Length: 541
Image (tube, rainbow, N blue to C red):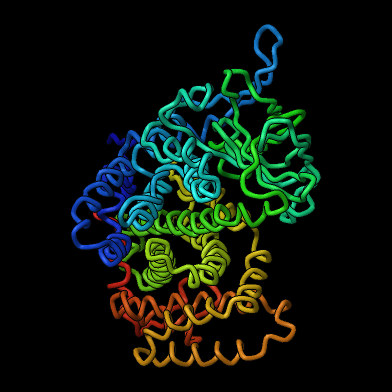
C-alpha cells in the first residue's frame, strides 16, 4: 500500500488577478453616487485599470519586495563625501511611479478630482500602503503652495504631474516632483508651536537660513519639504528644496532612519538643518495657519488609507472563508463565522461611505462640513482599523499569522493612520474646538445627518441623544472622545440608511446605534440577513 505526504487539500487559492476596484461594490457605488454622470465612464475606466494593477500578481510581488527590503540610509559616498541619501528597492520606485502616473497627486484641478483620487487612493493602499505617504504629502502640499502665487507657478505643475522622476537634481529640470514635510521637533509630539528650529532672514527677499533638528521627516528623498521654524515674527512655514537651483545639495543632514512598527517600505528620518536654505511660504508668524490646509488634506488621506486597509483585510477574510472547509461545510456558511464576517463588512462599508462623502465635500467646497467631519472621521475610522484587521487575520486562523498571507503586514500598518497627523486626543480636541468656535460646522453636520431622519428609529433616537449631549458642552474636554465617537457613528449611520442596502443599514443601526451588539466582532443579532451582507463584501474571482 503506497501513499503520499504531499497532496495538498483544503487550502485557499491566493486572492490575485482580480480588479480591486471593480470587485468592491461599496466603493464602486460611492463613485457612481458622487461623480457627475458625464464623467462616470472614463472615471470607472481609469479606476478599473488601477484596480486590475493593484490586484495583479506582479504588483503584489512588488509590494512584498518593497516591504521585505526596507530603505537604507547612505550618509557618505565611497570618498567620504556626505551625500545624505536613502536607497530603496527597485520595487518601491515601480510602485511609486505607478501611483504618480495614476493621478494620486493631481486632484485639485480635475473635475470630480477629489472623489476619483480618493477612490484611487483606497485602491492603491491595497497594493502597498507605504508608497502612499509621499503621494499623500505631495497632493496635500498644493493648497499650501498656492498661498504664494510665485511658488505655486514654479512648483504646482510639477507636483500635479503624472511623471515620476526619482533623480536628485534641481526641481526646475524635472518633469515631476514629490513633496515631504518636517514639522515635529526633536523632542517629538504634536505641539508644533513649541518648535525651536530657528529661521534667520537672508538678504534675498523671502529667503532664510534654518538651524534645527526635526524628529520626523517624512519621505526624505523628496524634491521639497514644508517645514515649520521660528522666524523673528514667530512660527513660520518654509519650503526647503532638496537640491538648490545651481545643482548643489541643500544642507539636509539625515541622522538616522526610523525603525518603525509598520509602513516599512517608506523612509522616515531625523533630519538636521545647519545653514539650510529655505523660502518662506505665507506670512511670518502664521506658520500653523499656512500649513493647516495640508494637515486637513493628509488627515482625510488617513481616513482613506484606513478604509482601504479595512477593505483589503475584509476581502481577504471573506475570500478565505468562502474556500476553506471545516466540520463539513465552508466557513462562510457556518453561522458564527458568517456573523463575524458580516460585522467586519459593515464596519468596512461604513468607513468607505464616510470617506468618499468627505472627498465629495472637497469637490463641492463644503468647508463647514469638512471642518467638523474630517477630525471626527480621522478619530473614529483610524481607531477602528486595527480592530478590523486583527479580527480579519483571526478569520484565517494560523494562516493569518504567517507573512505569506499578507495579513501580518496589514496588522503592522493598521495603527499608523491613528498616530499620523495627530493622534486620537488631538482629533477629539479639534472636534471640540470646531463645535465651540464654528457654529456653521455643526449646522452643516446636522443638515447632513438630518437628511436621513425618519428612516430608522434607532438612528432617530441616536440623533436625539447626540443633540442632548451637544446642548451642554461644560467640561466637554474630558468626554471629547466619547463625543467624537457618537458624532462619527451617527454620521455613518445616516449615510448607510440613505445609500446602503437595507440589510447593511439594518445591521449597522442595530449594533452600532441600537445597542444590539457586543464589544467584539461577531455579535450581531442573528435575526439579521447576514448572508446578504457577506455576499456583498466578497471579492469576485
